Length: 256
Image 1 (cartoon, rainbow, N blue to C red):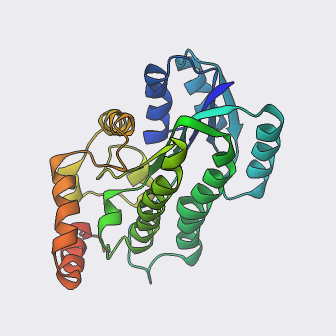
Image 2: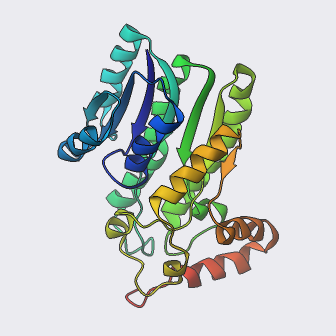
Image 3: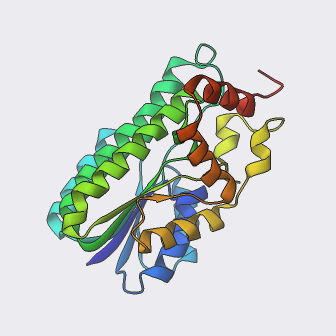
C-alpha cells in the first residue's frame, strides 16, 4: 500500500500539501493526515479524491506515536512521501513569553518532527521523499522570535544531514524554508501588523508548489521567492551581531 503521511494537515501549509500531493503521486492508496482538529480533517477528506485516514491527536502526546507504530508494523505500507508540517511559533521577547509556550514550540517543532521521522524511516523505499517544514527564520538568530527561529534552525540542519544519510537508499529529504506565509500561523504567533514581515508574504499554494518541484529535483533546501533566497545568502555573509540587529528590526512591532 502506497501512502503519504502529512502532519499539521488541518490548516495552512499542511492542508495545502494534502491537496497538491495527489497531483504528483497518481497512484497513492491512502493519505494519512495528522492534526488535532477533527472537523477540519473531515472537511479536507471531502475535498480529496484519495482515501484519507485521519489521526486526530496532539503530537505532544505519546499516544499518537504508539498508535502509528502499531499500525505501521501491522500494515507495512510503502511511505512515498512524509511531510512534517505541524508546528507553531510565538512572537515576543523570551522574558515576556510563558515558559510553557516556548517549551511547546520545542516539543512540536523539534521533538515531534524528529520522532515521527524516525518512526517512518523503516517504511521508506527507493524514491521516497521527506519534506520537513523549516522556515527562512532558520537562516539567522531572530530576536523577538528566538525560540521559534532556533527550533527551525534545528529542522534546517537535521534535514540536510538526514538527506546525506538516506540518499544512498534513494530517499530524498528537502528542508522547506519559506518566509512569512499567509496562513493562520500568525494568528497564533501574535500577528505581523506593523512589522516589515508584511512585505514578504507568500500564499501557501505557491510555497507548496515550489517545495514539491524542488523535492522532485532532489534539492536539499527549498526556498520560495527571491527575497528569501537573498536572505539565505545574506545570512552567510553578514557578521552575527549585525545580522541579529537586522532581524530584531524586521521582527519589531509597535506593540512590543
